[in-house]
Length: 382
Ligand code: GMT
Image (cartoon, rainbow, N blue to C red; front, side):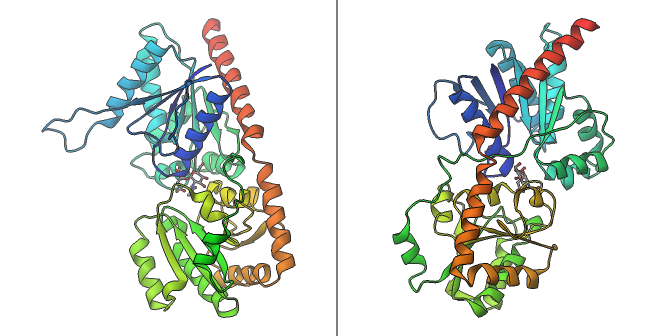
């Protein structure tokens, strides 16, 4: 198949999923065309089956806002026509789903019927998409996509609860490439960071309010009182400054390390003992899956799709959002006993294997095939 993929090219989960899916499909022999405004961060190698089409938006003195949607639409029309795409897969509803609809309409005037699949990722539904400044467009675009997928059952439910949806939504869970995400021998790195045998707690996020990074620090503060430990914070974002202040206020000093944005995240996860994800809402929690693949158990909030990934008492624990006492109690339970820790580590890996890309990618292939067939069948009926 010739597949167009639209996504955010940044470190965000939706862009990572889109890029890893495209890479896996290309490996399988499909021809993949990424269409976005800069090279996706995980698209850092050459493949004869992958092309990258950069969207450039001409600006003009009149524009306070560059009309990116128009530029993306034009690029989609161009790529679909000249690369003869069989299907277009857009990740994150805003603005990609409505842009795809517009491109589809323009292509129809050229006699081209392009099936469009929209994948909902999380905040496009649970946070920003619900805002009245976007809601009507998101509802329309979901209802007018040829196929819609959500990355968890929870996100599917939230979509029906928050929008007036008349379309089907298929759940295809997020996935992990275990060839890349696995526990690597990084003992020298561990010794440098934790020279006195400290346990290592890890958190990765974009430091937005929804991630509740202050809960991570508060959990760590409690764990550190009972167990020699350090906290590694990976990523960057708007809350970083407040978190730095909290670390100073709690006098956690060098025991908390801010590592900023990291590309080789699996190397850091390889030395981790426990991953903390206390998010207010998390449609799936891809960062937790990456940790689990590197044998790191997870303490998370019982929010969104987290229970679909993190099995309470097996791969980690789930606590109520904001219940840092309970999170710390569970963290100490796991870290305080080497046998328990080893068991949770094994369980985390076993669970991650259920989300192996080799298991999930064929679900997308089958779904594309179904949507292509349905799109052409419905057209020939009219
Ligand atoms: O806020 C983020 O974590 C980024 C965001 C995105 O769309 O880039 O992540 C969402 O999509 C990920 C990939 O499907 C999911 O694993 C995350 O759970 C989801 N984030 C939230 O729901 C907050």
